[in-house]
Length: 337
Ligand SMILES: Nc1ncnc2c1ncn2[C@@H]1O[C@H](COP(=O)(O)OP(=O)(O)O)[C@@H](O)[C@H]1O
Ligand SMILES: [Mg+2]
Image: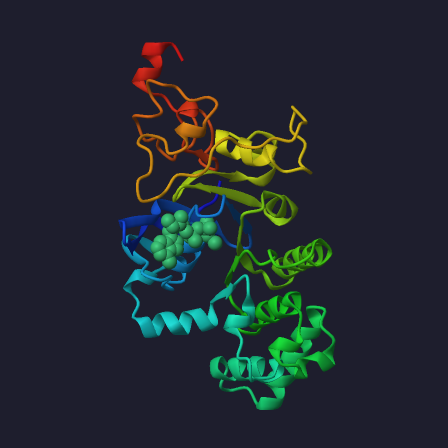
């Protein structure tokens, strides 16, 4: 079991709300999550489940009208909710790194890659000379599989995959402790994707990085993650060791996600398409939010009572699931379930 010193980042009861024309929408609803030092934690769920809202909120970056309305964000012993915007900006540039789906927007279009890297490093390591920073920039870029001479390129001269590697180089240049990568491989073809995922693993080992890997593709998680967290309709529904979750998913939603991936064999073998679609978050269903799509739904329990996100009966603290199949409920006794 993880002890508190193993935990680098801890999200506690986080709720993030959007103001919309249809009223307030909770993009993240009472989510708690621990990220352990040196792990790759995969965060998966269908589009619109709240993954990006959570990732951005963890950096205290605002996404549109998003506002953190409750909860705590503990990073290496400090509560980020208590820091000023300025302190947060320093932290984002130094210890917390982020890689987005399209890094084009995070890179300066009129600045060569090497200048961007060098400048960023010098801002955070003012004692370095320009030559030192430049040499380190070149070394990192090469380490990430980009030829040294390409550092003189402008972002638009590079492929999406290269730009992504540049973003990782930036995070490494700054010696980030935690990198939040939001759909980093979505724009890549499968071969580049596989290389990128291998690289993530290598970097984690070499630089002792901790990575939150956000993806709608559970296959990507299978490739690289140590643990996996599953999000559905703004809530976490399952978290656990990747092998355990893939072998024996506890939440019916996780099971559905796994069954719909062509390369992952479940007992039944056949490829599966999950019924229905995720709810509109402006009016989520009562009780368990997954109940309208759930093949195991218990009429007397699931549409009425919100399941706790907790270890299943008799299991260790390392596994958590929000599903009445795995938690006691008086109504279950009444119906003999
Ligand atoms: N800019 C926005 N304005 C209003 N609501 C938003 C906005 N972005 C996201 N949301 C709401 O938050 C939910 C989660 O979105 P998001 O975090 O982007 O999901 P994911 O990254 O899992 O696809 C969406 O389903 C939507 O209801
Ligand atoms: Mg997203």
